Image 1 (tube, rainbow, N blue to C red):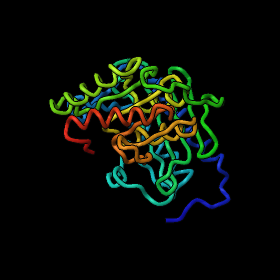
Image 2: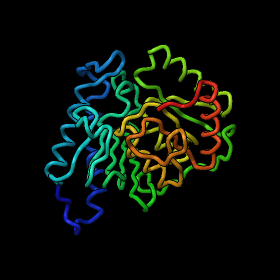
Image 3: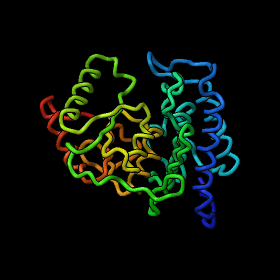
Image 4: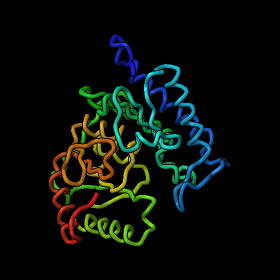
Length: 281
């Protein structure tokens, strides 16, 4: 597969990412709060006609502008790219992160995008259209909110930290739900508070912006975490799996913090799972 010519200016990649998520936000807001078709991918896993329309818009944009690039999207994904990275450029896109919120009229959702080159994220854009907040990052260039540099918080202990998490759609399975609720309680009793907002991409961006100090989630997909993780790293934070292995977008378990509380949260995860026979993937 041929790459984009080496003389392609880097700003075009970020500009495309920004254009894509802002177009996604316009489509989202045109339908938000109104009638829409809602289907089920699982018992509680929803997909709306807006998710599909946004992803089709995005795929058409990339096909026109970068025909040699791959696209991994939540609704029209290539199954092989869900679990492996690919050589060259791959755009990892979630047309609506927070679909359940969106479908219920709750204004906590976004479009999330990360661009990988040979498996490493190099550009990210996350747009929350209800707050008109655009989070962006380029590898080695820092992270920004509406063009202004952002940085992670200065909290240096979990007891002084506001944490956030999410639950997978398999949470209704008793053994999974009981474990994750117990883990929620484990952190709740050791932190200032724990929130659950319903959008992993926004959770990550809020860690990057210093609004939250740490995020953990057990079962994420690449489109949930690819863009937000780069934004956290470029804001000065740290992202890993639950064992401390540096982040890769195909990791299901993600821990993202301001860096200062990362080792403490890893220790707390280890403590919790040591009582349960060890941590599994």
